[in-house]
Length: 357
Image (spheres, rainbow, N blue to C red):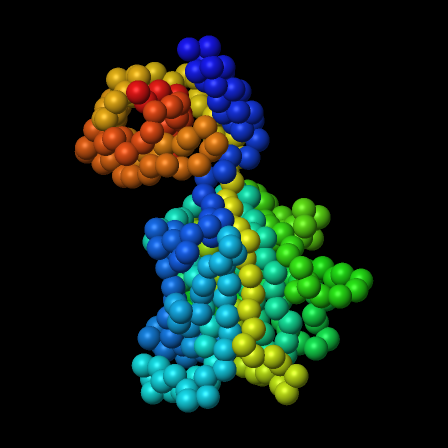
């Protein structure tokens, strides 16, 4: 009994400590034997199925799932030559293959710290990227956040960049705005080892980091010269993650090595101070019972639209829309203490601590 009490107190301490800082809400450490399909989906082809061959950039690769593999906790995206060519839906032929993985439709979020530990790739024509797009929107008027982009040109192997795009829709070069900054290392290449690429995305600012060192920061006033209809779109939607390895329109040269690969150690998303969103005056608007609970939680309160349940490490273990169904099946969860976050249709959030027996 004493051991169980000590464990509970330690868990409570860890929970409280995490609540004061960044809470890990989503991650993939790539520890399985294949890509986790509950977290990632593949974009396939050349983009021609969406009316934009070359994914809108004149890229030369054909994306296919088999170019993503997992081994010893590392995800690898391999780029290969395809001597026989791969024919797409426009009957165009691609002579290179690669992969693009996204969380679209599986994990969307707004605001937080987003980071990945990646070993990139050298070689003329290679274009690795870790980036985000809004889950419901158009480009570029609803924005784009590029956490990491690199170009494997012979003269840019020591450079990495972050960027933000915005503008008006439909796209016009005269109203497309692009803010970027680059980081350089004094010797070698970013592809020589793993580096951490991240952004901290808040309501009024986005800040880029490389290996925890700030690269640059943007806020609405950074775009003082742009039309009001395209200003600061980064609050309007939830966003999803993407990692891909493209071949630029300029293509490889005789020094480019195939096959080749980029490697991803992990991807993580944190959100800030979950417990601090509790409004004490509104705390009694919602009741979650029974507490302790067994297999079912009942929610009492008007206008509740969704529920998220976090474990003591800050990981989301259950997330669903509740709408008119105020009973939530929790039978899949292990015994322990959890944080339940309720959100109503107006975006109000309240948190409750629940013990599951």
